[in-house]
Image (cartoon, rainbow, N blue to C red; front, side, top):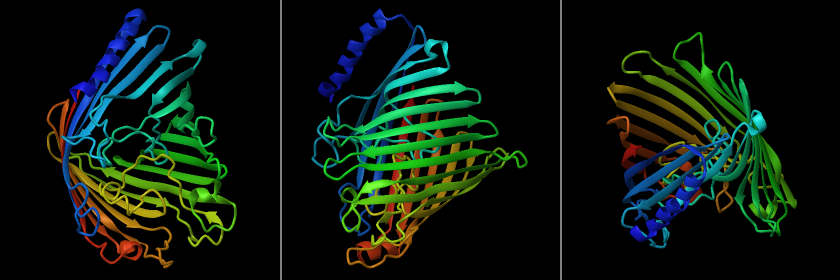
Length: 432
């Protein structure tokens, strides 16, 4: 690991002269070290031997930012993610899992020509609201075992225009590069944020893909999101988002069997949640959230239309196991109705206990390999997490998750997909 870590050291040596020659007003250094231990059981839902059933991993991040003159700043983040003592095994970990690599790197120009415009150029985070549509780049590398990768950055150009109480972002991100062959994937977006009587976001996103032999694919999304407290009821807050999607997709880019050359998309998604926190020393809270992501009403493809919700580049977790170990069998980002119930409190100073229940159901029945409709019952999950804040810089977490598959798995994959899945884990995180 020491030899491969030298790339990060050489990068620092290269950047130091830049700070020396530039008029640097301040330099800040920070980061994080996180160590996790994970134990899995029955993630294949069959009780057979799974590829990985227990492991240790670590994520190390070093952040450096510099404020220059004339409202100019730079930021970059070095990262190392790896499973302990496992490298280049040809499955989970690639050959470079011990490398120290560049995760984020961008420059920021503020108040351009004494205006309210700012621009950020380079690999950066694009996270809006609860990341229901935009939060993680699917092309970002993940050298540790899925789903615990920490890299979410986009190569993007973002222009911000701020005028109280509004802040508006215009951005373009390159998801994949086709090098002139016509198969690029690009993301374009506008997000207007309003801080008045709550927090509001109005967003328009479009992603384009141009497979050279399949025709152009375009998906558009219009989103309205809001959250805030109810003044008449102390401790009560609400949140919600609704997304309308439309576009067209070359049928060969999705699947065979559609009657038309170009398939239209008409989809709908969103969520609505309420949360109530009691004002006492234990700070108990209760919450419930409803999530809807449309599915294909005619999954036999006879209508030539796709109604399945496109999650774009979401970064939400609807269950530790459902979005992790069994995600190969259950997609929680489309064709789902999910009810989430939350409860938590602080049993002691610096200690918190959180319990979450997820109920999964398909919005529309699917078809298995035999052409038969499946059940809509996709199961349920319990997650319990205990956190201890040892100090301002050190945090311990312990969690247990239990997933029970519904009849959907038997109908879709076979009768032996009926085992309950479990995950037990702990983490130690130090921030500096």
